[in-house]
Length: 269
Image (cartoon, rainbow, N blue to C red; front, side, top):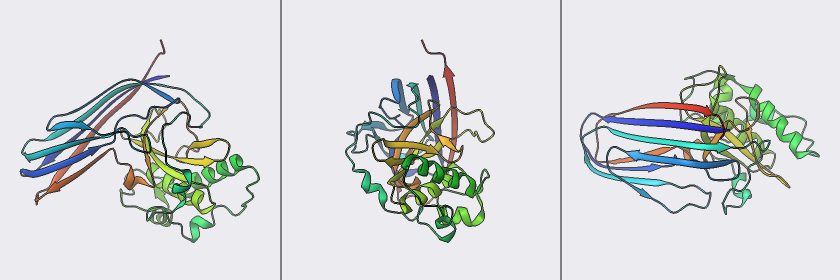
C-alpha cells in the first residue's frame, strides 16, 4: 500500500521568545515494513539541522531560534510504501537490546487493577499470550476522546475507566513488562476509517517475542499492526516519543498549538 501523509503543526506565542530549541522526530522509520518514497520536512522559522541516526533508528532534526516573534509552523509531507508482515517489525536498524524495555516508567507502572487484568499466566505459547495481553488492555478502559492528557499514566487511565490510544498503549506496556516481555511505546500515523479515527497521530505498542522479534500490537483497535500503520518513533512511554519537543528560555508568555493531519491511500504503481 502507498500512503501519503501531510502533517502540520503551528505554534503561536503571546510575546517574543528570546530563545527556542525544537527537536523533531517526525521522519518515518525506514525498515522492510515501510519504504520511504519521499519526505519533505520544513520549518517557517529557523534552520533544520539533521542529527545522526540514533541507536533506535530514529532520524531526528533540531531547530535553534533566537528572538522569535512570528508563529512557528512545522510541516512534514511524505509518501510511504507499506507492507504487512502480520505485525512483525522487520529490518529496523537499531542497536538497543530488547531487555532495556523491561523496566517500568512512571507512566506505565502497574497497580492492582492492571495486575488482575490477566490471571491465567500460562506463557507456553508466547504469541498467544501476548495477544491475550493485548485483548485485556483493549477491554480495560473505554475510548473517550479528550478524557486524558499527555501526563496521564496507566494507573490514572484504568482508575477512571477511559482514555485514548496513548492510555491503551501504556496499559499494554505495563502488562507486558509485568509478565517479563520487553515492550515499548510507538508513535506514528494510521490510515483509519473507523469511528476511533481522529485528526491526530496514533500510538501502539511493540512487544519483543523470542524467535519473532518486535511485534506491533494496537490495543486501541484490538489487533496487530498491518500495512495501514506508519511508524515514526519508539520509547519507554509517550514522554520519550513526541514528534516535536520544544524548550523556551526566558519566556513568560503563553503558547498555543494547532495541528492538521491528512493521511490518504494511493494505488500502488
